Structure formats: structure tokens, C-alpha cells
Amino acid sequence: MIAISLQSGSNGNCIYVETKDVKLLFDAGISGVEVSRRLASYDRDIRDIDALIISHDHVDHVRYAGVYQRKFGLPVFITPKTLESADERNRLGPLDNINFFQAGEELQFNDVSVQTIPCPHDGIDGVAFVISYQKKHLGILTDLGHVFKELVTVISSLDAVFIESNYDTEMLDRGPYPAFLKERIRGPQGHLSNTDAAELLQKGSRLKWACLSHISENNNNPATALKTHRGILGESLPLYAASRYRTTGIFNI
Image (cartoon, rainbow, N blue to C red):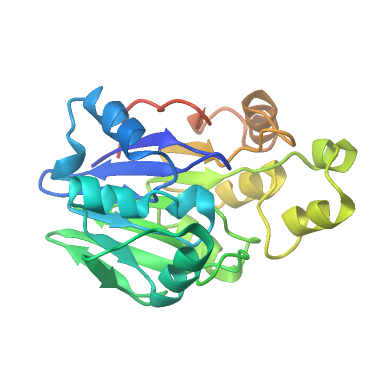
């Protein structure tokens, strides 16, 4: 199994996961032209993707789902509540290949399973994902809200993970955001801080690597996120930071 973060952050999210026989996209927050171009740089064709799976209704995760389907023919997997909210907020346009799932359900694509994990983030009916193939498990854990109980169990099962490390506590406190927005970000339906994410990763005994994701432009930066994680985790776990503007390159699981 391989994975590529095509982009990560409030300006758009999309992750590509591939096995021998299955190709999946998670979220549709960057344009169809751009995701097609970025995949082509790795000799992948967006039209070969078996499914687009949507995590929740926020614009940076679902904005271009309709384009991906209409222009490239991708089947969309989404919860009914997420689709209803996303269409109201983002005007996805006509969709004619929708596959509904319920939050908490496991999806199957040949010999690849995708477990959906309900999250307390303030999106509608949001989920995180664990992708399993040949006894290897990859987590896509972003827009989580807070470190809820099931996350501890999930992280201990993973071989690799994209994990949100959204904000630095001091940068958020000192930053220009209004008080209500700061409270939303650090509240139980917001995002994980660098420290939250690092302490969760401490429980990932099987992890071969972790990619810090959904890093805030205003309340964090990759260097600060990595420094905080290194201070808590030491040097043993390979760590990477997903870019808000570029791909990560290919990760192997």
C-alpha cells in the first residue's frame, strides 16, 4: 500500500491511497485540474480511481466532489447527512453516482477495507478512516475534535498515519483570531494541537511513520509542529509534515 497527501490544510485536503488492485481518494478539497495534474506527476490517472470517499461537509474537504464525479467519473462515497449539508453549503451540483454509508460502517473495495470512525469535530456526521490491506493499517485522522476514547485504540493498531496537528497553543493564544474562533479551535469540536497529536502518537507502538497534517497557516507551521513532536516523542519515529500547497511524495506502508 502507498499513500500521497496531495494537499493538506484549510485551503484544501486530498489524500491518495493505492494498493495492487484498488485506488482511492479521500476528500475533494482541491480542484479537479490540480488533483489530476498532481497524480499525473506520479504516473497516475485520476480516471482510474475506484472511489472518492468524503470525511465531512466542510468546504476544504468536499468543495470539488461534484467536479471529480462529473468530469472524471469517480463514484462518491458519503454519508446522507454529509451530502445534504455539503450540497446546501457548497452547491456541489448534480451527482448521479452516490454510494451512501453510515458513520461507523466499514467499506469494502476488493481486498481493501476502509473503517469509518465517527468524530466529534463540528462538521456534520464527520468521520476519520482506517484503511486495511494485507494486515497493514493506515490511518487518516484529521478534523477530530479532541482525543476521544476510540482514538487511543485506533492509534495502537496502525502501521502509519496522517494525523492532524493543527495548532500551536501559544501561537493560537497570541494570534489575531477573535476569542470565539480561538475557543472553537481548541474546544471539544475543534482540532488537535501539536501536543495533543504528539501525546496520541506516543500510544502508537506499531507506527513506522507519521505525517503531521492539517497544519494551520496562522497558528502553526511545519517547523514548530515537528519540534513539538520531537520534544515529546524523541527521534525514533520518522515524522513528516504535509504541505498546504504541494504533495508529500510517496509513502509506503
